[in-house]
Length: 128
Image (cartoon, rainbow, N blue to C red):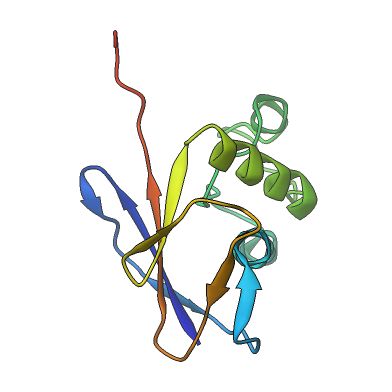
């Protein structure tokens, strides 16, 4: 079991959650994939409510799933994963594993019980 924590530059977001991973080492790319697939599966199973994940759905999906729609449309985990990888590549978020930054998607992440993986979302500065 590893802990998943979301943070922004304003601080830690409430509600750390756990992800069961059996391997002792995985590439960061695979850790992100498992996180995204898990949160999309949970969102799709709820069948209501706003998606709160690592990255928000693309504009097209948001338009289809608009906030006033009463009909729930499931999200595509593969699309969400692609958006997450793209966001990582453009520094939309950084990943810290037990306070050590992992900068390469193919970099190996050592995992053990109690490992804390922090996804720190970066916010672009206005006018800068």
